[in-house]
View 1 (tube, rainbow, N blue to C red):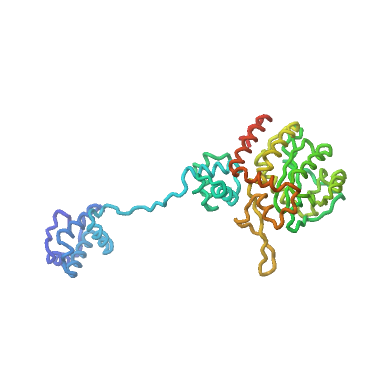
View 2 (tube, one colour; view 1 turned 135 degrees about the vertical axis):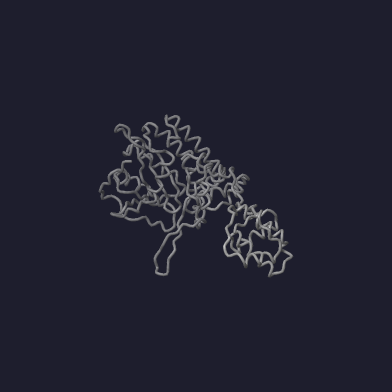
Length: 413
């Protein structure tokens, strides 16, 4: 027997009951979802389903199930949809999460990363919060609330990517000068670690060298440039380096290279009452702090060859702009030591411990006693004269001027 919407002459519940009792096989002509849905709706409307008794409703459902081949649950869903209009209309509406951070916020993040060389998420968040909370820049209000994890999400967006820019080691020599030991500052500033960074070679002609020094406790960093690493060029640079630290230098730590482990440096350090220490044998982490900071120099100055004659120009940039940026406007991570139940000491880096070297310095107990006379007010004025991003803009502009004088394109780096 073949049932269609047109040839069905069943108009009462009794006829439906007789049909179900007398029909064992049914060949359906309702093939499409649309035909079946319309047949179900018209049948419910024809028999006024809502006015039927429970027993009669069951007979009507059995009839529809036999004709359409749908299950009871499918028929129920179509029935419910029929009460609200066309059962074929999909009422589902996909949930769309509200976008919290706009394109302008992504541009502010990209700007900050361009200015600071794309720091890690925690350091970037510290800068963004300071821009709004400390320097009251309203445009940073929303982005200052961003989580560290979501910073990395925004860095994956196309909007961000459109706006961002994205060596030969000196052989160690054995010397019997200096004490082989790891610096032990015991929470006091003045224990600096020093390393050399070579700018590059050109046809066997050496480029400039950077003398990178970092305080163990505060991570106060002074970077200077020299034409060569011989005594004639290094001695005035080392003296200038000591002068630029706001506190007295107690210990000078380096690796075992000859530019630092030599007689003239020992004489200079003895004159200034500064202790000289060097890396221990097979202890590669003794000077790890200074070596990790070498990456900052590479990020800003690149790997390209720079002629030695430009060392004085680079020193002006380092002293006037780069070093103040590192110490007053670039957050650093400071470890907190914890001891587990087994007595094992472990260092962890918490978000609250991200701060600039100046902020770390003034957080030390009785920090003023470590400072050179008359330096605190000057340091405070430098730290609060402008925001981190504003100062980073100046550094970028001055760096571009420097590279233009040297004849290099800063965007090549």
